[in-house]
Length: 143
Image (tube, rainbow, N blue to C red; front, side):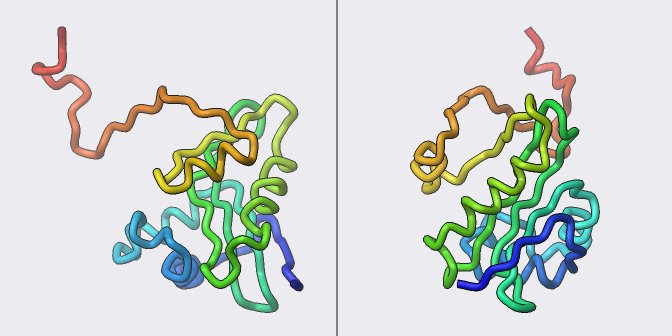
């Protein structure tokens, strides 16, 4: 398979949305909110992509300080190219961009838990999410 990997290759919102739809990630991403998708693409500071000729077939989209933590927000490979090692290679290249103490952090879809454990990730149950509009100082939450 002739796949070319690129680091921080410019990517359009349309290309990203198209890949999300062709992968299984579209159902968990705001593909109908163009401004949000454009912001996701424009503000990621580490993006590794996989291309078959001029067609985007995979992406690892991350936000990182390159020294301590790298949050791998999106890992998507189109369905027709899954199980070929593309996702694994996207993660390898992402990791190669990071400093020696930087850890790769991600939130996996429940169906993908076995995949990440198989690759060597350790499970960490200490993730907390604050949705937009939720008050940090909600009086019912203070003890």
